[in-house]
Length: 289
Length: 286
Image 1 (tube, rainbow over the protein chains, first blue to last red):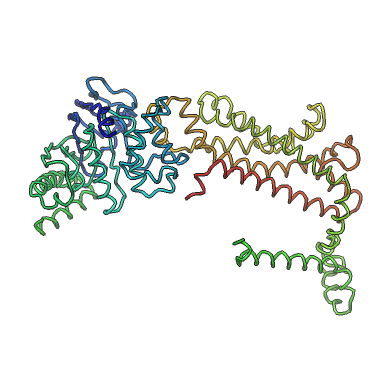
Image 2 (image 1 turned 180 degrees about the horizontal axis):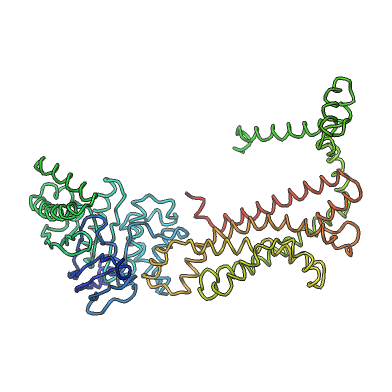
């Protein structure tokens, strides 16, 4: 069954070329994304990290096709993105499970909506539910699930559609630290088993280093790519190994110093949120970690 | 069974019993106020402009014991049950029509921008007109009195149901639409599996409220229109039953009619709520 499902994975590649996005007209116009160019590589887990409120969510809406860029081009496998599609499924910050459907019906929603709910899809759904540890909760409504379970159910609901690219917008935000780590393990196992193209947005540096093949460090608004860091840690990864790893700590430091420079820049322009980051960063430095 | 043991339950029972006892005492005030002890009270009432020999308001209301006796008496009469039957028929007829027309109409207003542009302004102009203001026009325009009353009860529930359906459908979170859309759902599928169940809780609430209004309206309509005397006797519904009792001077029966309507309205709303919670099982699990 596992091989079977892995065979269906068609990994796609997204090219973002000189993309800008502004809102408002004339003098009120505000540029949120400016001249972004990067690639979401085939079969890789690309993590985008940047200060909060930096326009990452805007970028996600562009990738999903809910909005179109003001300038530039976004293409999946060479084909320009114009509208939402099952090829690029998005997991948003807030749960978007349908409250009126049980876990099972939520997971089966995509195939049923497209009229593809054959026996092998049912089997695949059962497999996915088991992978995310929700087999016993298949007849529960989202309101009966914990926050972590809801996120896992949503992962399964997205994966059953075999998207070419999975896009995740801070999916584990708001979960407590323990649950978050559990989610990282579930999620990275799912990724390692079938190597889909994944694009993961976060503000959490530990999350980024643990999950990523490649980290894109973003600037403050208007969003630009500041740096790209290859995360060449071996897979499968385990949290315990990562804490010990010097390489992981190097990467973390590298990313943090870029984020710090970025925060200093916006701090000098009067951003209060950046001030918090600068303070936290200096404390961390003085502890020597 | 849990309910029987709870403090709140017994508190409720005691309150009702105390209420009934005070009512009984109050309405028999003509008897006990004749005693010499109460002469200051009589003088005080007289000074305020009330009748001297009984308590104002409650003293003029028939006593619960009298009401119960009148009720027992009326239970044996076919006319009383005929009133129930008539009112129920009108309520169910008007209410069913309001559901059948109101739910699709509300959904259409919520989903289709063009339909909203055309239908909503007219709807909003007609909505503030109270259903009872339609009574004369309705009697003129509908061929039978029965249809006229049913039309008025229909109006009572219709506006509430439509407003709830439109509001409910519009307040469905946009992220559900985004999610369904990106999984390749068609417009029809989004309507059937997202809009419809997403609106269902509001439909249930709108129906329960609409049902309450239907009872208010049917009683008034029956009183005003004379209640279909072609049915013979007091067959003109519970509203007419009350009116008839008033005209006939049977005050006990007025109260019997009032309480009957209360019971009828309560059970219809409860029935709807029960049915509604069967339709929306995801709401009670939180």
